[in-house]
Length: 210
Image (cartoon, rainbow, N blue to C red):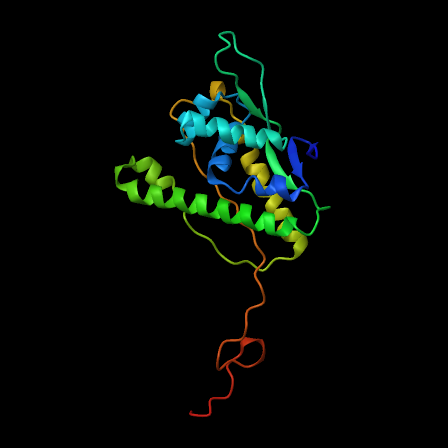
């Protein structure tokens, strides 16, 4: 098993098999619980992810095989050993074999499906949410014309805004706080095809009827 590289709190994956191991919603849910830095037993992870303890244990061991999580020190009672993430985020190495592209696609599809399910769950129950939480929700997006350098700057600025809240462990979370899903999806759009009836640069063409 190739050892995964660790850089500045990131787990850098280069093996397609390791990347493919993440393409499972249960494993993404487990990592979301561990990335803040808490050490959690399989039972504690199960309570946060909605999985059974046995299923959680199975997925933790699968992630451990690829160096993504590791067992922590046994607790005083010795009954259930905790687990921890080996970093605070995951990044795919730029030096990757060709097969990694397909593996990345599988992980991204799982990631999008999981986030879609979380949004749908909120919308199904939003009537029962307190007004202050309903008013704080934002569902939206837009297109912006940016250079590659500007896009990099925007991405960095968004990360900097969220960084103070990123790794709050259980002991330091404010009263009345709750998990909030923030999805950053920044994707350059492909060049669109001209609309029918449009001339060069999208300008209206000659209308043979008019």
